[in-house]
Length: 461
Image (cartoon, rainbow, N blue to C red; front, side):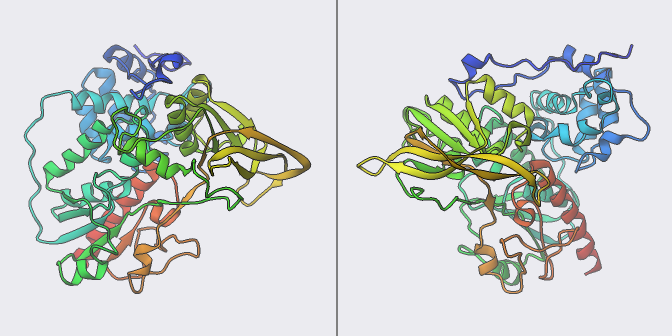
């Protein structure tokens, strides 16, 4: 019988006053009974609007139908025809703006919990005994992937299945890109990321860590000396932005990138960490996106009283509604219509507080959101001994500086067409390296498009 409930099955979670003191995963996942019940809410629409909202074009009604039947193995097979990282996407994709945003059930109630079902299927599969992996037959051609984040992994996954000899080059000591260094354990356990990467390795993908393309090796050397016939640049956007206000160079001021990398990769929150990090008694996080929520929730878990300052209102917050809700439940304070103008210092050069100016909203700006403008003479100071800047990132200029003939935007993004082709023959790019900071699933979609274009290029060549 179909389930015509207007509401999704609730996701089991840790209690807020428990989870804000640990780094274990907040959402606990559906049981088999919950997953089957939720899957029965799907109407199996013939025109599949949900699939149209998915950047990697998963056949969503088909996999959900298999979940409703209890055939989770078949559901996994359907998902992985389109996605290399289902356990990741089921956790961090903004489904509310993509597949679930197109769901017909959402017109008169809540949409089907597509993301939760994808996560369930992937977790079910990962809990099963590992089946023997059949490596694709080689086609005799080599492809290099720069960066092991979502765009690079998606591109690598599609190319290895087409028979290419694929090597992924990663600058850090652990593969996964932003999935490993940027997203906290309580949202995306690192064991899950590594499990997905091990699946790609089992198919034949090679991963070389501690390799900074542009320093360790150049793109020209990869192509001319190491025999890679085509290259995909998925190096992300890891260069942090700052506000350029007085006091940003004080002790106790972090970019969100540094703060999250030290926590996620170096486990700096553990008592025996060799690279400990402290959020102090009180921390101010500047920004309103998902990264700001991640930094704030990490600081809370380190014992700080945390305040997020954002220059617009709650309505304009770019972070996922679920992440904002979780942050508020966990005791994070929000100060809206607030813009930092200076970070004050103690006598010994540490952060003392953040001077802020009240803002008001005016006409929409180029982003389509109401523009914040200062309220004259409306200043106040928030006491803090830690400030984390989470106001965006841009691509690192290293690859552009060391690659002749590679055109970029003024702000640093690599110029590429809709298939990922750059101005340099045989070189493709996608994800945050092209668009600036965006979502995991959009980066994966770009990686998949580039893989198809790279394959066509090689066939024509």
